[in-house]
Image (cartoon, rainbow, N blue to C red; front, side, top):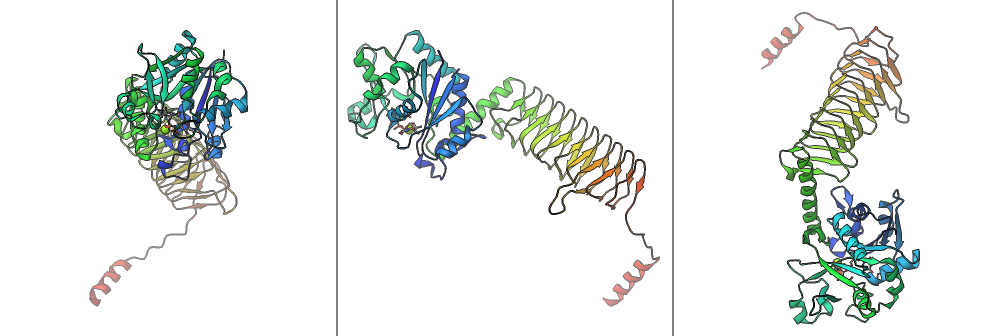
Length: 463
Ligand code: UD1
Ligand code: MG
């Protein structure tokens, strides 16, 4: 039987004080709801339904490229039970275990969901509720158990007597595994006769109890996993927990960190062993770092693939491939489409865009290289620039193997410099340079003997 996951994400999140829906706020580099969906997927969910409402389009866009995720709109927020009714109305009845999760609890682990599904299946439960013992239970739904310790009902904080509010400390996490068939057959039995006039999904516990269906409640070991995000402060707390969870995982696999509190690694990043991540490094997107690299300090790489034995220092990079033994920085900017081949060096205050830098080629200082294909063994002198843009069109530059570009060279594209050619410093190259040629574009130097001494003397006399 397929496993279904329903992720409730229609809420507003007033306390975020934001123009964006709460679940679109990012934890590390991914939206909150993305983390819940990932946990559901890792727990084996075949169909994932996200209930959207507030800022629906922004939430839908998060999953635009994920075919296993369906978004269902809950136009009016009439409660958690109503959200599930909307899913049933849109997609029909469910078969198989159906987990309900929240889009604002990003720390939830897949293993916890798997355990909940296993328990539901093993005992043929109509519903298994995941409960928790938070340090402060205020605001949470409370678990009411009978003399035998069996769960009887979930009573919302506002519907509890003051005595119950004080005595019932076990709380509803809001995460459940239902039998999909029994959930969809009976969801309409939920009513709105409660303090908030809402359809409470929590009422399913009592409804099943009355029907004599087996219901269970298990308490999570780790409350912090169930932390819901309602404010920017809680977002920062959860980010710190996730940052350290990921960094501990990397260190356990052989990655060195000078300070794990100052390294941020996204959930889809891989880092090889014996690589060192220095402070203020952020690795986002689908970045991969090989073995024996040094990354940072002050480096942000997004979708950058770095092979073994590289050093990337004080650099910002996007959508770039870096092959073995390359050194980058300090203070380089690698823009989309950059490919640095083995042994290349990109140095200080250098920007590369949509270009290949050949094997063992060097662009060491103060250069812009764009839309360029460069061969191997090239040296680009300080301050050299490919002029690839005429205000309307982008044009390519081709540089052969073993070319020497003197400092302060402008290469006005489209232009080709042949293998083994040499360009004299400060040239503005507008025509192709044949292989092995010398290209020089600058006016003759004038030398006037004694002129500086005469001037110095005149200035002294004027004082
Ligand atoms: C809910 C539970 C409570 C539990 C708590 C844990 C109910 C009635 N109560 O309370 O027992 O202790 O979560 O955090 O379920 N949502 C929708 N559509 C709606 C209403 C809510 O999608 O119409 C979503 C929200 O975006 C949120 C989640 O469901 O992600 C929970 O809603 P919220 O209003 O926070 O419920 P609580 O009152 O906190
Ligand atoms: Mg809540």
